[in-house]
Image (cartoon, rainbow, N blue to C red; front, top):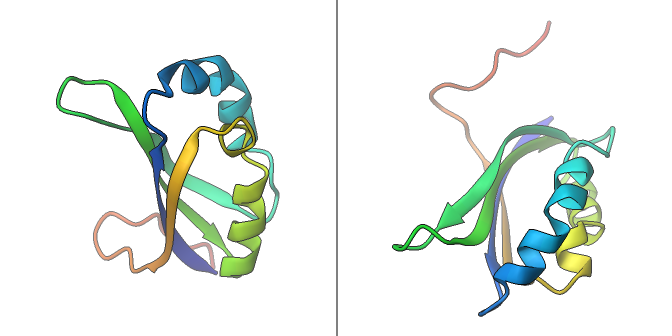
Length: 99
């Protein structure tokens, strides 16, 4: 299993889309048995307004995570402007692996 860091940026002037799809997005975050969510939350601009998301997930492959991201209600509603998906080396504070 590999950790992945996901950073998304919302389209400009899209706070209403984020707010109206938030509950569906929160449900979706836990919906895929092949993607384990470890951290999720919105990142904020200097005024404290949500402008994107930051997630750390764990999965067997980047392809699995990519497919999962395509089903995000935020993405389907047109909220997402940009997504960065990278493998992540969680050096400090990582969950303990089951043996």
